[in-house]
Image (tube, rainbow, N blue to C red; front, side, top):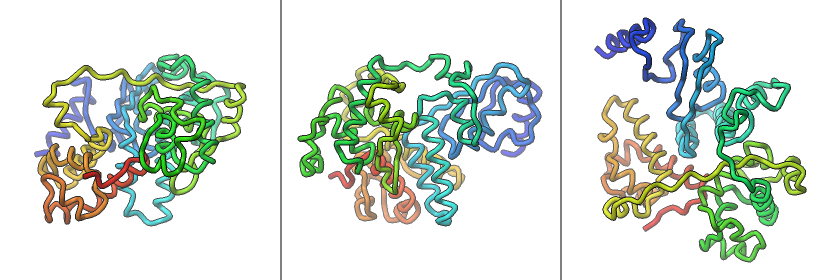
Amino acid sequence: MADEERRRNQEAFIAEKVNTIVATIAFGMGIDKSNVRYVIHTGMPKSLEHYQQESSRAGRDGLEAECYLFYSGGDYGIWKSLMSDMEPEAQEIAMIKLRGMYNYCTGGVCRHKAILRYFGQDLGKDNCDGCDVCLGELDCIGDALVTAQKILSCVLRLDQRFGGGYTALVLTGSEEKRIIENNHNKLSTYGLLSDYSKQTVHDWIEQLTGQDYLEKTGEYNVLNVTEKGWSVLKGEEAPRLLKPAQKLAKVSKVVEDSWEGVDKGLFEALRRLRAIIARKKGVPAYIVFGDAALRDMARRRPSTSQDFLEVKGVGEKKLQQYGEVVLGAIKDYCQVNSLEMDIE
């Protein structure tokens, strides 16, 4: 029945009886429809090869087309977790591709130029006149140069030995135990961006990385200032840094309490992982884990099987079924975002 319904929907789309179709990434292979006017991704693909192939299904007739990509940092952790059971050599290649895709999402360079560069080609100019970057659709901060100099200076003050999450904590003036123990609260760059959230500063660090002012090295993605980064420190060129997202409207006390202590980015990452597991097993998502369980995971951030069992809605059966992959996803997310684990 499902195959028959899928076939009818596909034929209706091709015959233009419907204008929009929601489909998996496999849809479109071999389908001859040249006048697709838009492609919307609701999550980050695992590589630029996949993104280029999927987005290029729009505008095959040479006319205008729109491509939208909605992503979050949690997408990176989910893909990394799903790649954990690959052979070491294949996993290394897959991770390089995943990092390239994430850099594309977080970078502020011409989209066309970034894709061509990834495939070893050159656009030949700095402006393609067709993407959100080149059309000036990005809402950037006005003092990007000064902000970038503060970030790059902090990386240097930390002796280029820490990742983006930790660097963001120092810049925002965090009083976490490890910051104090390392005496990084005494650095001249400590708290320079305390007017902003840790997530906002971390996003800026990712944007500087995507624009090649910073680079990540080693297993723990340690930050290093590049040659381009030094030109920013000297004031010779300025990067693009996006304005922070506007704060959401106030919510009720009941809603506020239900989210207390929950890392919302981790919750969303776990929600997407739950959807993947549910599709593989052919069951509704809530059968895998309820939202209350996911919120408690994002609140406690367990690192061991024993701590995982303390999560509301998790028993021995759930631990055996999903423990390894979920704990792996939580660990990866916390590592990337410099979050403490095993919160009581």
